[in-house]
Image (cartoon, rainbow, N blue to C red; front, side, top):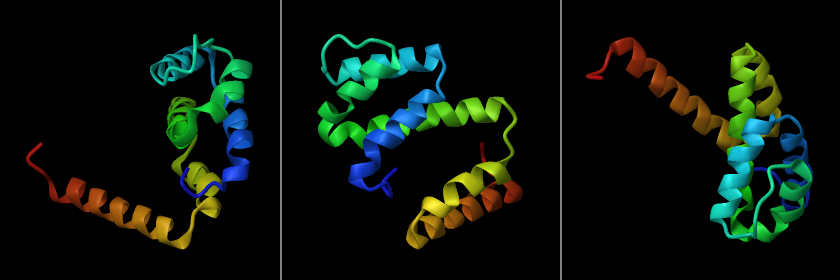
Length: 116
């Protein structure tokens, strides 16, 4: 989310919301309520309209909405490779390297065992 240029945020948010179901929209509206943007409605039009009023919290709203979308994709059986193909082209080299580093650490943690 941090890689999305400011002028593209509203459009990306709108596209992300288009993929959410009513339950996800309700949960996102509840988060909007915590930002005190008025009485939120669990519909795409309202959430997109108030998005600019979130100020510094816009990227957090994007992360939440994208997380719901990611959960839905996982539940639908979207393969990891498909997800990576959709995301990686939009990341900076530095962000991609951080993801690789974290993935390697998680892989090693899992394979070597842990106290959990």
